[in-house]
Structures are given as structure tokens and as C-alpha cells.
Amino acid sequence: MSQTETTINRLDVIAVGPHPDDLEITCGGTLALLVKQGYKVGILDLTTGEPTPRGSLEIRARESEAARQVLGVPFRCNVGLPNRELMDSPANRYILATWFRRLTPTIVICTAGRTPAASPDHHQGHLLVEAARFYSQLTKWDDRFEGTVPYRVPHLLYAPFPFEAEVRQWHGSFVVDVTSTFEQKMEAIRCYSSQFDESRIAKVRHFVSGNNISMGGRCGFAYGEFFALPTVIGTSEPFTLVMGGKATAAPVSLPGQPAPPLE
Ligand SMILES: [Zn+2]
Image (cartoon, rainbow, N blue to C red; front, side, top):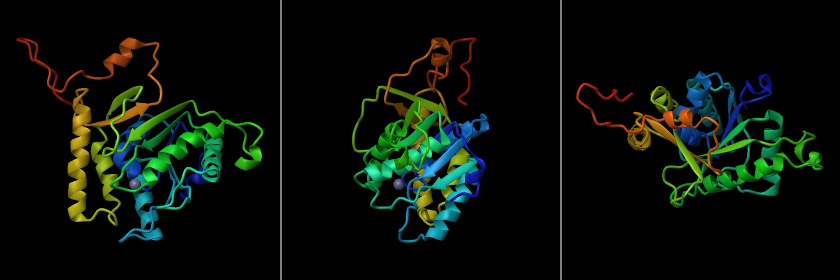
């Protein structure tokens, strides 16, 4: 567990992923950005990620703590559910929902999607977070949540895995401009040297960069991270919402009106 665990009792955002490094890869730039913007951000790793061929519990704990520091996230804790056998079960829902009831986040971010070429924990983690979010608000069951009081998580955000099996039509989606934190994200991923040796980290950088460049380019950003929602996006300020993007990465340059540079 992170030593910062006892010092924080309420979070604006909790990001939940099955293994240490999943969140860095899917949404590390956004987590670092939210910290810079002054939000209280936390990370819950559902499992230790062990066993793996070159890791150990001690090594993985050191790596995830180093990544936490790189991202500037003040809170990170390991939920302690079993790696490789992670399941969306009632018992695990109680455990995760108890964390939500204690930390009362406004937004929960969860990694999302089914990855047949990678760990089945990814799909189960997605299901588990959705179920735990629902369980968190249930009344007359406090004994199943260590005596904590019901809490309704207002917003759920998906951070989809780039290589998921399904092509989904999400109700809402958006891209966060992570140009200012992209290198921070890559440095956090590099902390996991037991998982990504020199040759593998080069490939990870290649594919993560390509994905973030592609996503960012759709909104005119140099690097972007994609998010989805289970609902459409509501706003009372449509102008601000639309102007959040820069429309296109390569705008037409009119005579006398040079296009703004790609940031
Ligand atoms: Zn993973």
C-alpha cells in the first residue's frame, strides 16, 4: 500500500486498473494533467500484476511507486485481488465498493475493453468497476462494506485499451490534450522495467505514441488520450464544449491568415 493512503480521505478522481502499468498506458497523461490542474487524483491497482516472468512483488511495488511519483499522483493503493484470476464477483465488488465509499470520488476512471491477446483480467476489471460503482450506493448492506455509508459515484469514465477486440459505439467520447504531459506519461511507463526491457520499451513507445498522436490529431492536438462514457455528454455551455478541441491537426492556411501551429 502507498504510504500516502492514510493522509487522503477524499478524492476528485479515482482511476482503477487491473495491473500496475495499465493506467499509465491508457490514461497516464490525463492523470498527470488533472494533478497539474489541482484535482485530487488517486490510483487503485486491483492486483499486483504478479507473477510475471521477470517481476516480483517487491519489484512491482517499487515500480508502481516510482510511476506514481512521476505522474505526481498523491494517492496509490493496491487492492490486493488475485492477478490472472481477477473476476467480477460479489465478494470483489464489496471490496472495491468499500474503497469508493471511503474515498467518495466525483469521477471514477476505469480501463475498459476485452483484450483476447492479453490478460483476461482487463475485461473482468472493467465489469468489476461498473458493478462496484453500483454497489457503492446500496443501502441496508453496510456490513458488507465494512460499515461505510452508501455513496453514489456521479460519473464513470472509460479509458479503453488500444487493442480491444470489439469496435464499440460509445454514447459519448472525447479526447484529452496530453501534449504537455506526454513525456511524463512515457517516463512513468519506463518505470516498469521488469515488464518493459530496452527492446520492448521501444516498441511500447512506438505504439503508445502512434495511438496518442492519432487520437490527438482528430482534435488538433499533438498527443491525445481517448475517453468514453456510458452516457451522452451533457453541457450547459455548448460553446465551451465545442471549443475544447482545435478542430483539426492540419487546418487550411488562408492567405494572410496563417493557421495556428500544432501544439
Ligand atoms: Zn494489464
